[in-house]
Length: 426
View (cartoon, rainbow, N blue to C red):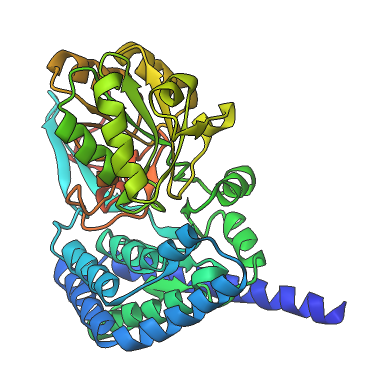
């Protein structure tokens, strides 16, 4: 009992120290120049490249532990790093450095009839707590975005990616030192103890915003327990709708990429909807591609009548985020029925239509209430880097403050600066 109590005390003290150091760092970051922040990011990217072998060794430990624990192939794909992925991580940090600095920018200015001059100026949110699971790249993406936007970051990596995230965080600290900025600007929680998450969720007044990135259980816990405002990254139950006016070659290309480019990412299509008008000509070739790529197909009765290779889909399949090489397929009676299916089963994340009919496309884009809607493009473009944001902390499916890929601008708020000349109010 004494040992357990001591462990809890150690975690509490560690989290209090991280919070104090982060708040002290925020005061310095508020005055840091764009040049200093950019120097830190460029140096961090160089450090990531230089430490590639160390990061790979650390990742190998994470992958070995995950395999021993029975992790699925899709989970291992999210966790595993190679030289190409490490280069992508470093490049994302450099891309963030190249972005305009949002802090101090007046995005609106006006003068009232009485001569008072108003400006709405971008300011950091403060200390941002990021709780994530299996993706080591989140360490670099979140740290870089927070630094660029003048925020301090407290990163709590999942136990699955702990070794990899620790190695990457060391590179970020090296970049901060090189630029003369406080290392506490980006801190990785140095314990796997789950109690650390509870301390973050209760840290009102220390942490200003919590961003959870992971599975349903993590998101549910954060939303239920947090005393800190949450920017939530919820399920990626994404749809691709192939309209009756879709070009077959385009539909095949987009659907295959949307599902199979990487099955474990939140932007992967989980349900294919196909218009009854083109099902006889389009469905089988699309399923040929998916099955040849190793994808299991679960279809409605009409889908199975057109292609018996599809297994029967249950009601639960329409609301399942597989994050694996599995897709559910449903034949629908046009764009209206596709929109209704997405409204009923979707997670308001990312949904796409493939069609040559502009009117159908515009109807889909305007009526599907998701953070990202696409026309003739793969749902796998649901990524901050593809939006020109350099990276992302996550895809917010909420509607308050931030929605869609969360980049530097979304990690800011604003204050109103008012300039007068001795004005008094009558």
